[in-house]
Length: 281
Image (tube, rainbow, N blue to C red; front, side, top):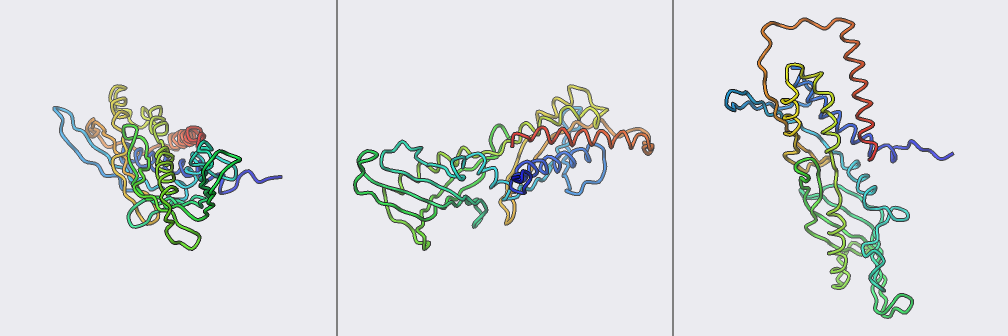
């Protein structure tokens, strides 16, 4: 019986789930004034008679997770391939396979195996056919999309290499590959919008002193604000603005055993919700 729960199958869903846990745990800790292991930064600002606190939550995106999302979104052909020309360019064909995603010299880098055929004529009657094998190397920068709720990739340089690692000097192939791979890779996107919005149903429990209007305004401020390429991860900073309601007038008592049990049950419900919200990955 084939294995259905391999690391390869679990990685995208578990990775996005980990992202959500990191963000939600830090946010809840801030809301409940408990210690946070990832050090959310709160910045206070006065707005009229309101005291606003801007919270910044760091989230680390592992490159293996981003690579698996790349495969799932773009390399959907047989044996995880993508046809750059879509089979519509007559005797020309450029097929990529076995992608890897990481960083190089401060940029994101996507590498794939390259198999190309360049010729003239019509399918079945091609002349001057040139078959090329090697690798394609695309570097670029991540960008923030969808009003701060998604992360994409903007290619800046496309390099074709032969099997020995030398640059392929073929103007026709370079022009075809350059324009096609840019259009395809620009479609790559990690959309955290559904996960960020799903926290809305849980906020009343952790922000009991806030009105529904305040909670709705808070949700409108959740944004990916900054991206930083690191050696092992792509680091994102998620920000949100909380309106302070002031410190409680008296120290709050410790939770009873029954209250702790109730909180644990709610946490388990939240965990189940997170699993459901990332199933599409």
